[in-house]
Amino acid sequence: MRIKNHPILSFDTEETIEFSYNGKKLRGVEGDTIASALHASGIKKLSESIHLKRPRGFYCAIGNCASCNMVVDGVPNVRTCITPLKPGMVVNNQVGKGKVYEE
Image 1 (cartoon, rainbow, N blue to C red):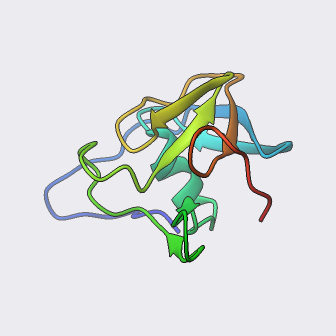
Image 2 (tube, rainbow, N blue to C red):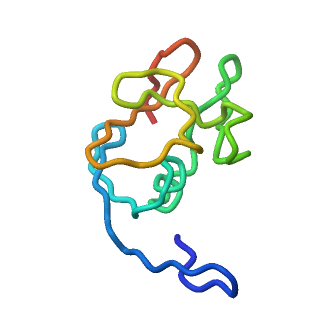
Image 3 (cartoon, helix red, strand yellow):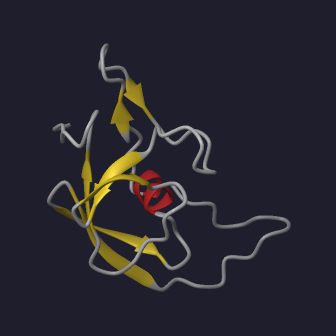
């Protein structure tokens, strides 16, 4: 799920970072944001709409849309598309005012 070869960019590092997502241990790569690590791990649904429960995925990647808000290390409403992945992070889904939903 990752780009390996690119005509302009180089991906020199392969340093892996372990974190948990909804209680599951996952790995990302140094330089990932939380959302990019989840996307590379095959997780496409990052949140859902409050009223109709429609899935929301990796959308703007610049912190504007709130489609990627999650609870990170106990802090709700973290924009995971702009938050760098760090070792040992605990990431959980949320809906609305900090309510966690199960996939």
